[in-house]
Amino acid sequence: MKFKALMTDNGINLLEKRILPALDKMGKICHLYLTRDHAFFLHNLLNSDGPQSIAQFKISSLFSDYRISSQNDDRIAFSLDLSLLHRALRSILAVSAHSHPSDGLHIKLVKKLAPHSTLPTPFLTFEAKGHKSAVVQDVPISKPLSRADVEELQHALESGQDIPPTLIKAPDLNLLQNFADRMKHVGDVMGVSITKHGDLHLQISTSLITLGAEFKNLVVLGARAEGGGGLQREEATTVQVSVKHFFKSLQCSLAKPDCAFYGIAPQGGCLIVIFQFFVPGTRQTDKSISLHCRLPVLDPGSN
Image (cartoon, rainbow, N blue to C red):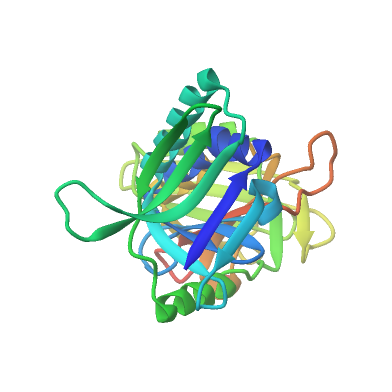
């Protein structure tokens, strides 16, 4: 089992400044899943509890001189602590900025003897080589997943790719974040309603107070309704989700997406948030990167 690559400047900036700060808010521990063509950061795909997040990158968007091999169809997966990964990346960038590395930033899987241990421990290692020295940062990782666990992870990934029949473009994410932040202090459960007219309604109710926000005439992708809008109960698809999960998903705005879309899976299975990225300087979707979250529902939902 081998993996090593040279990180591109774009990959370094993307991970260090945008992706890792966002994903760390979703949860400290995630799976890094590497294949011949893609790299994935995955939260909670092997665990039905809590919100799931899937960040997918084409290899060329992060690495050059990419080499991977394993007896499991050249697929490698392991879990790691995102805060340690982010800290290691920032540290080696800060040190190498003064040492002027001549050979770029290398990343690879290694096994080393950890302090006070007699058994080799797996690490994800960053190395910046200079003319006279090298700077190394080791990030401890789990034992690589077995073939059966990788298959389970792949199956969960594929089953989570379904797009809701109706997607509506989210209003300003900062506005939503401020609203959700206030909701956290009111209650734990939020009702999210979506119509094919492009209406989004958020509501939280307790025995003492009801707080809500309604956004109308939003952009609709997929199945839509013609004619006048308005949030009619018989037309809306509604689910109940955790306010904490909803707020946590909005932290993905740290990845600086260009826009986001909300949708409800068939039969109200989950609330899906898809973050869209544009090719810099254009309005074209950047297909080398994708990020979406799946929030578990606390109620079967209603149509």
